Image (cartoon, rainbow, N blue to C red; front, side):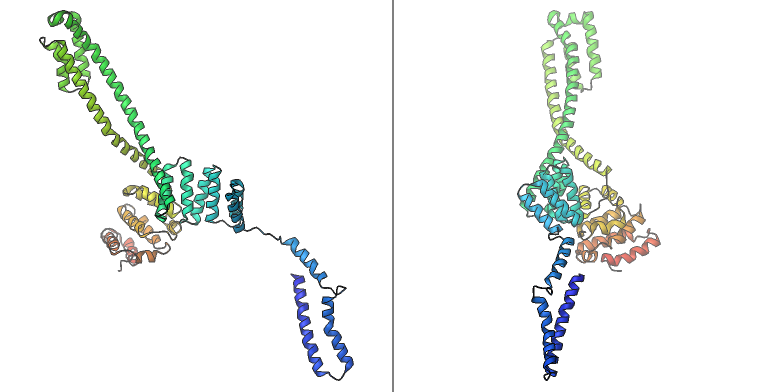
Length: 454
């Protein structure tokens, strides 16, 4: 820079000398000596600039260029060029080199695009956990970047996180409803999720069926041991001989005890005891009645098993939701909040638990520019459900909701129906007679910010 300044000063000096020489030529036309001297001054710098000898200025400029080039590289890497180079490597299926380029781009200037691109390279390298982490970082920078959702869904599917994969694909589909690739991805994730639920339900059903079959086998064994000797003795010597025989009496006692221990209806008891109490019908009628009852019970068992499939599936889904509710973690982005909120849809208790896990001060940071009017209305309804339990938290929530970016625009765009719903909640819950005066004053001041007027 010093050399460059020196050269600029020389050029300025040259111009000033030319102007001064021109003025001297106009004023001193009578003196040849002065004219020659002036002429010599005007050409001195030109001679120094053009001559290859001792006045050659390129000799001064070359060392400057050499010093400058030693400190400033000709090809300085930047985030964009590294990302573009990574894209070229990716097209050539050199995924490791592409990943390295994206990493350098992130180090120079982290962007959602660079993180999402590195996630795709990690997916190709089957580094699914790192791909999921990159997609999370991309969404922290831009929670509307659809490729981050799509690639996050792919990574989570490979990690076995089917529910999270379906949620990512669902949110991406809401951003671009006509994207055919996202539609297919969501359909596949949903199919896998439903299949997973059915597998869990069928596993529970299978264990139930096995338990039922074991109990049926034990019952059949008991019945066979108790009834069969009676039938054999009846065929040999008739019912009269059976009634007077000691062994048969003992068998009858065993039959009665087994029937008392079993939970069967009165008809079955009557039918099974008929061969012992009625001598004229013989053993064949008793066996046929017993067989018909067993067939009827078997068909009833089948119907009960079919009916229980839906109950087990419903229980499995309920267990999944309950397990998710136990592990509520505070979301850090609008996307994470909406995924959790939709998962608890229809259950105010679970949604209230999610809200209580979030500090109201974090709301502007979480939502940024992504708070929708539908989510706002649902949050207000949920806050009203536990207002009497924790007024301080609800009032703080309402205050910090107004600090979310673009909140005024969201309120301005609310429909008249939505405003009526908010007004009804405000009048019946937030501004009721039971509200303490310190909270009532704050809520009255917030009415106008929620578009309700005073």
